[in-house]
Image (cartoon, rainbow, N blue to C red; front, side, top):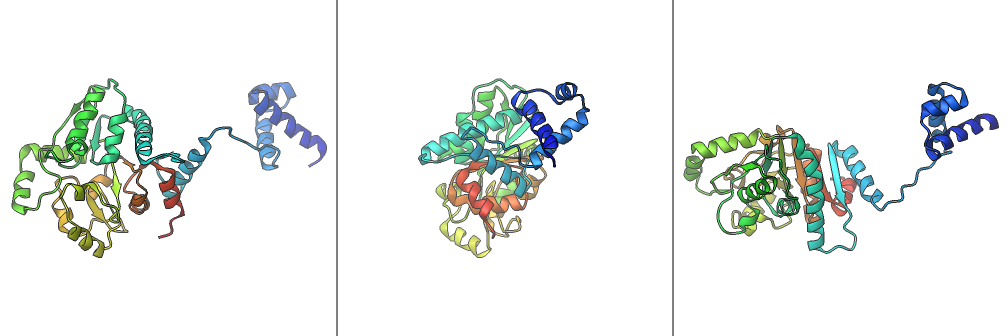
Length: 315
């Protein structure tokens, strides 16, 4: 490349990036075709004459988001920077960020399914009061009782519907039940059957993911015991989604902790067009990793710490 050619590249790049002229305006100004201007701009970048610098601390998070989307084929990834934040601050920021992300997404859907847990509770708490009216929130899993009722799917659906002036359905059953005959009776109940069927066909599902190494809501509420966890670990489980324990291939394992669930299955979940996972506890990263590589979710909202863990994982 001679100096004249190099000068043309610099001239075009300066007019386009610094002066803000369009390619059409530059082509008229220089008396050449628009296609040649486009070619020169590409050449200027390829020759290293142009370097981009973004003057924003959000670049750190955006770069992680782009890497997650590329590596796992996610529709979208949203990452928060947790530097110097306490656990309560992280939970609040994640809820706010999830609310902003999901606020844009639910405008194009009608039915939204909710699982349960603290991450989804953080989303609902931080979601603004706005009128949508034509939305319906449907529990993906049962949830009854007064113990930790604020993280139950029924309560979360009610609260979300209240904030958006929408409607909600209720699944009048516990998340897990140890009596097979009682479970069969409940699942044959017309109301429960209808809600579960609707849950399978929602436009969007919002879930949380846990890992077996981290004590989860089901243990806290007494649905499963330490003995159950020990047995599940022997089956090589790596996580649970909507209280369904899965292995490294993303398949539900054969255990009572799964068969006792009153809620949609992982196979049901995989048929839902958009499945958004929200997670902020570092100990859950392995479950999130396997959920991503097995395409159990389409979108992820998480922390920078978890993002780096799953990007660097080679399990």
